[in-house]
Image (cartoon, rainbow, N blue to C red; front, side, top):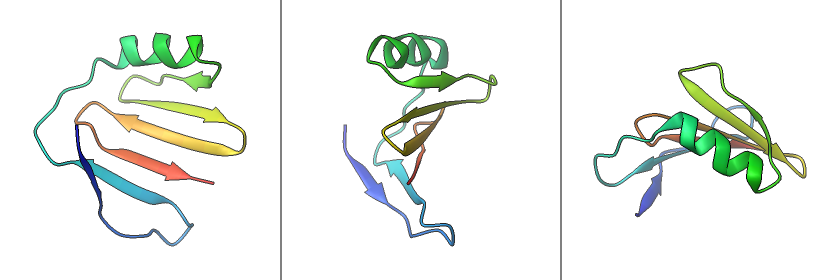
Length: 68
């Protein structure tokens, strides 16, 4: 799957979107990320994974927000 960077955010975050239509299973992503050693929050509409000072927010539509 390919992604493209949209623009830099004011808070140094980098929003990224998939180049094709996707739907992610957030519960499955939550499990996979926990098993890979990420600290994970799953409020239902997104999954927030943190490790080594980086936070990745994953949305069901494939959009990502990566922040330091």
